[in-house]
Length: 509
Image 1 (cartoon, rainbow, N blue to C red):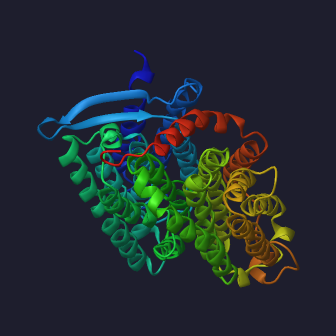
Image 2: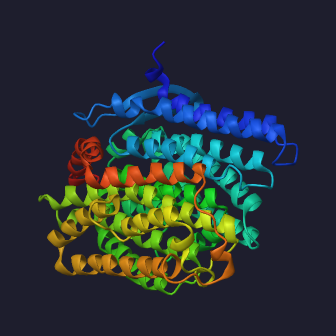
């Protein structure tokens, strides 16, 4: 049997079944029992196996075509023409590989630190992994919507079980924001279904629509995806969710879940609504630049490390949406492709860097039980290995050449320069602001004299923590020094998308 025939289904259902198995084993209410140990090993085994199964998505990926690969089709709800329709291209395959790569690291990172209901914690991550792979590979509107909404459940449990004091407030805010946005997406899908007779994304793309229709559907999609990215001004749930979530929850939230919003724009808004997207492009560029500049200043003011990194995520994701919507300002030149590819590379890079930054905060939190910058100082004296990793990831977060953080940002800045000098000027300010808030945090946390007793008693990285941060450090440097494999995977799909978007879809055009 050729596994690649059903590789996407396997990547969705294997971690979900593994999550159910972890719940079945349980932890007997105590994280130190033998059952809890078996459960942890099972969670790790399933997540590593899922990563190994996902490798053919890279090794057998055909970079010469923009067509969907590894396609699976079957009827799901025949009466409504709803299909179980999966496939990947150069845009979704890297995001699935990022998901399967990050999940085992998150499970290793939470190995000993999760004391309350660890079985539910690990099971939630595995189920979340399967659902996220499903979102990135679904090509049917209803399947996409069901998986998109289902993600809320494990994430809700994650923050709600393992979170901080205000976790209930943070989870309810997160769910309400997301659901309100997604309901409108469902309405848009049903409208398109009434036009086409099915929920197939490709039929949606081919359906001619008036400008008014495209504008309304674009706004419906925008509300769903802007909340996920999150774009300014619907970003306020993110810092709350990050601060309250356990370390693993923050990593998954930053590394993968925010990418679903960016992915939604590329998969749905741009190809299905090219004229509507063009109409709102100026507004999207404006909102992205506000996120990049304003949120950078907000990050400078933070006293909590997690909040600072959360605001940094919003600023970095502003780069992604900026790259995507520069398209019409640079149409016909190389700028459009640069902006789109830069936005995609930035998504992958941000997944690695922000995930690593949150893990660094988690390492400190496990020892001192504080996220406040003021409670640290001189960490490099007692934790030299940790300090080296933290400085590397901070540099990547600031966009240092040679790290993954530089590649995407550089491409988007060049693309914005081709569109408008002021776009480029404002976008480039983030490099200064990003360096300012990131290095300011590093200076106060890592360097200087040992500020208090807690820091003096710190012990350096354990083998498990070193392994996780080491793997992420290699990935950040690899993408930074050699981005070609990633860019090559995307380039044909991006070109095809740009050609598609350049064609008007106005009814009668």
